[in-house]
Length: 329
Length: 166
Ligand SMILES: [Zn+2]
Ligand SMILES: [Zn+2]
Image (cartoon, rainbow over all chains, first blue to last red):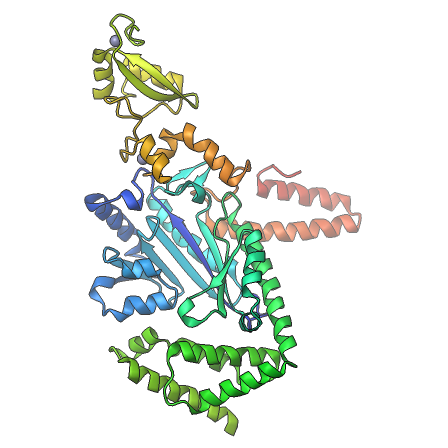
C-alpha cells in the first residue's frame, strides 16, 4: 500500500485475539473443556483452504523455533507443549494459534507499511470463526479478555523498523520514552538480533476503533521512519561512523565464521551506511542475508539440524560471497 | 432477623448479591436458602423471579455458602480481586458492580467504538471506501457552491453511516 520509507519500515502486522462466549478463559480452561474448544476451532479452520493445519508436536523441533524466529507464532506458543496445533497460510502471511493468551490469536502480516491490509486479513478470519462460534462480547466493553485492562477490540497493530542510526547514536531509549508517553511501545524485535530492528506497537487500543488503531500507528511509524532517515543523513559526515562502516564491510568480506548476532550487528551497520548514502551494498541483499541465515531458518531450509559451527561457516561464506561479489561489479 | 423470602422463619443464611449494580445482602432461612441453591435462579421459583425483577445483573451464584461465585467458571470475588483476572466472560456480568468502576478508570469514560460481532469485514471496508469518496465529492460540491448536489451526497452518507452524522 505505502511504498515509501520501505528502507526503514520492513513490515506490518495485526493481531486479533478472541475468546468464545460462555467458556472459561485459557488460564482456567483444562482437559475436556480445552479439547472441546480446540475441536470447535478445528471444525471451522480445518476446512479453510487458506490455512494449513500443523501439529507442532509432530514436527521436528526446529520448525516451532523457525516459526517463532520469524514472528509467526509467539515464543510462549512455541514452548508450550499443550499448544499442539497451529494454522498457517501457505504464504506464511497469516497464522492462527489457539490458546495463545486468548482462545484464539490470529496474526497477519503485510510487507512494508500496511497495517490496514494486515488487519483486514486477520479480521476476516476472526469473522469466519465468529460466525460459527459466538465470541465473548459485551456491548459496553467490547471483546472480553481475562485482563480487564485488555477489553476492547482485541486488536494490536505493529510495524517493524530498522532503526540502526538511532541505535548507533544511542538515541533509542529516549525515542522509546517519547513514544511511551503516546501510549505506544517501541522495543527491540528480538534482543538476540541486536537493538536496531525494532517493533512499534499499540499494545492497548482499549475502546478506540480498529481503524483508528491502524491509522494512529501508521502516522507514528512514518514519523519514526523520518526521524531515522534524518539521523542517518547526519551520519554521512561522521568520520567515526564512516570508519566503522568500512571496518564492518571488511569483516563481512573476509570472516570465515560469523555468529548470527555478529552478522546481524555488521549488517545493521551496512544498512545504515546504505540509507545514509555512503554504501551501495543494496538493502534487499542485506535483508535476504538477515532472513535466510538466522539459525532456525537455516536449519529448516536444509531440512536437518545443523551444528553451530557449520552454520557459522556457511553464514560467513554467504556474506563474503555477497559483499565481495558486489565489489567486483 | 426474619427471612426476607418467606417472611416466617428466622434467617440464618446470608447471601451476597448484586442488585442494581450495588452489592447487597439477603438474609434467608435455611429452607429458603437451600431451595434457592438447588433450583436454578431463573427457573420460575419465587426467589428467581424476585432476583430477576430486582436486577438484570442478579447474581448467578452458588448460594449455599453465601459467597458470590461465577456460575460458569467458579471464580469468587476474592479470587478475582486478588488475581486481577477474570475467569471467564460471564465473570464480567457476575462481578459487574465491582469491575465496572475499575474498567472505566482504566480506559476513561469513553465507550467502545470498535466493531461488533456480525459486521462484515469486506462490506465494511467497501462502505468505508465509499464513504471516503462521498466525503471528497461533498467537499468539492460545497467548494463549488453546488448545494443541491451537496444535499444529495449528504443524504447518501447518512444512509451509509447509520443516521448519526452531524
Ligand atoms: Zn425463609
Ligand atoms: Zn466466570
